Each structure stands twice: as C-alpha cells, then as structure tokens.
Length: 310
Image 1 (cartoon, rainbow, N blue to C red):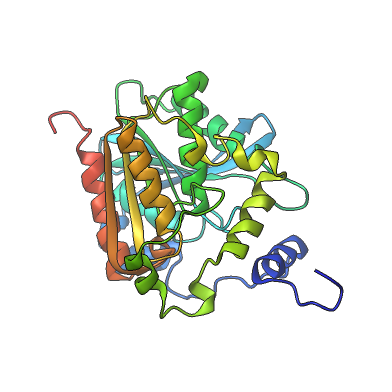
Image 2: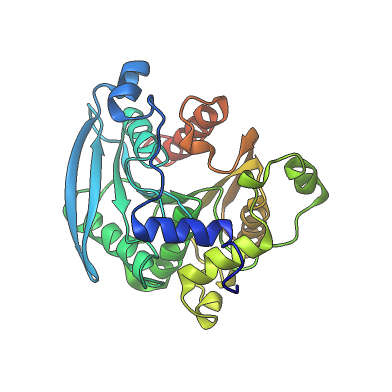
C-alpha cells in the first residue's frame, strides 16, 4: 500500500485497536445485568475473575459457575479476528453465562491479541496454559471437560486441541467450534455458500484479501501460516477428540468449518457439523437473535451427550 491509498478495513481496525481508538460496543442490552434481567435462567450463575499464570505473562479469565452441581466444564475463547474482542463481549460473556445456566462450569479466557508486534504462538500458548491451569486447579478430574471457541477463538481452540492430542496436556472430551477460521487460505466456496453470501453488505464479508491480512497478522510470518498449531487444517487430525462445528449460514468462512469437518471425518474423528439457518458470521455475539439462541441450545445438547448416563 502506498501513502496515497486508504488502508483496508482490516488494517484500519488493527491501527485503531493499537491506538485505543476502536469504537466500543454501544448496544445497551448485552451487558451482564441486562442479560440477567432478560433471561431469568442466567440470574444464579456465579462469576469469579481469575488470573492464570501463563508462559507469556498473566492471562485474565473469568469463571462462570452453575448454581448447582456442575455437569462438566468448558474452556472458551471468544473471537475478534485475533486482534479484537474480549471476555465482556456477548460471544464471550453471554455464551459462558448460558452454558453455566445449563449446568457447566466455564472458564472464559482473555488471551493476548495479535497487536503491537504480538503474533503466533502467543495467543495459542495463552489458551493452552489456561486449559492446563483449569485442569490442574479446578477439580474436574472425573468430569468431561470441553475446549471451544468462536471465529478466531475457534481457531485457537482447534489448534490447542491438536497440541493436546500431541501430548501437551489432558485431551478434551470434545472440541466445540463456532464458525471457526481453520485454514490460512479459505477453501473455495460451494454454490450454496456463494448464493448465501451474495446479498451481504461488505461489512459482513470476508474476501480473500481480508482473510490473508488477518491470518498473516496472526501468524507473523509466511512460514507460520503452514504451522498446524496455527491453522489446524494443516494437521493430521487422526486421534483428535470428537468435534462439534456450528457454521453461520451466510458466511464466507463457512467453507473453512465445512472443509475441516470433512478432513476430520476422513481421519476417523467423531464429527457433528451444523449450519445455523438465517445467520451471518458472529451470530453468537447476538444473544437476542433466534440463531444465537438455537446455537446455544445445540451446544448444550452436545455437551449433555458426554455427561454420566447420557
């Protein structure tokens, strides 16, 4: 880009986040108090902020604990193109509240973002260390413990899942991936996906040049784009735990979730993949939407399949 060119949407967002000038979410009804007021089942979930001593420095997290006995646990990573988002956004906070209301203890992780010179593997190691901390300190030895995330967080969860399969810690009971970006280059879209995204505005699209900028900024180098821990579609998926993928219907990144699911099936992994009708990328960040509510119910049903007596 020369000096006379406008920065791309991704580069503009990156610069704004690094400068602290990125607009904050102005929605008045997605904070914890508003969510509890609207959805009574969230009211008794207990929240506790924690600090995880990780390899690259302390990582903030938040525990969400059910009112009664826990049926299991989930370690969860929000999305945000590897550069944005936080545990306060609905994709982090509401998801964790909703799963805790269904009886699961949740650790939501504030992994380091790929800003100001930070690149892979730092966010990945943050999530790995948070997973291992939860396994060591939260007393889930006899319970199913799942690892999941949305969008970029789904990438991190899958990459850490590969690390754990390779011996870096306890293997998750399953991976839960919402509209994940798992390829450094997104597979070609099917005719169905092309038709689904055709009417979307530019703000909802992920054209190849945007994906390239996002993924290279995260990876930090061309070589790292091929690392299976950075982009798990490069991994041999044999021996991975069961995987549940929910894709948004009208989403350029749907090709990544569908392609990864096929790779996992061919490797002998137990895979369930769903496409949430009527949704665009990031639908778990829209807690009052029908698609967001349906997807939370689907995730809850998946997790329930691993509980004793299921």
